[in-house]
Image 1 (cartoon, rainbow, N blue to C red):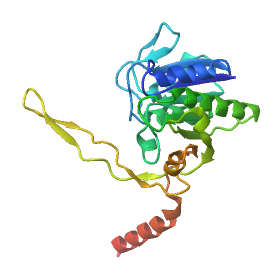
Image 2: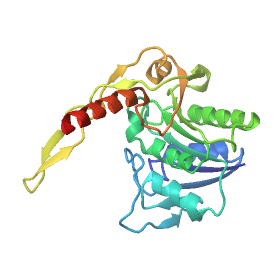
Image 3: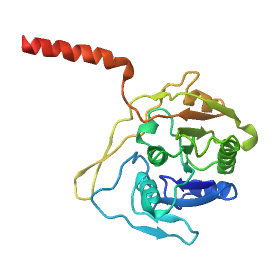
Image 4: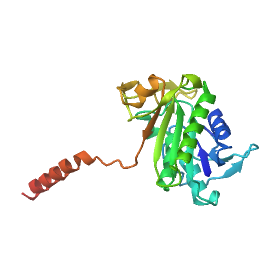
Length: 256
């Protein structure tokens, strides 16, 4: 069993260290992660500047690029083999609802999925690494269960896992749930630079809008580990017929 670990908080983040320690006795584990924090980089790839790989004293390899860069490079030549599983995290903060679109943690896992490899993105629901040991233990438990039931190394799948910041004894069983939704982000923050120029900082993520039962927000708020299967197909299948009819109507009007 071979596992590739990455993240978006950087190779020195406590979350990736805890995840490595939790999985190193479960399988052969390699870490390829960003040199610096790359939160909210989603699936971005670096195409117009060179990427460099270095090895840290603890054996981790780090890249001057995005989370997706790290996994892409690892899978297309750096490792020299195909891992059975790609694991990303543990992220410093939640990746629920709309967060998954922006998340570098999810982006790293998704890059593995795009290469046909099962992948999991792990996040804690709050920032600050509180009860990180419990989150790592739950991550190891989930990976071990999937190995026992031969769910790894077969068909590719992509899971987004959010773990409440609770002691291990207080974490409730996992729940499979859908993504919730957030309200729009908070207003942009403006400041004046020492040179008199206006600086803009992206505002904080909006609060939960859809946190009803069945969502990741609801599950984690009640102490459960939230597991959400993700897919890459962004097609609005329910509206394909509507748009086909609408465009046909517009073409007919144009011809007339």
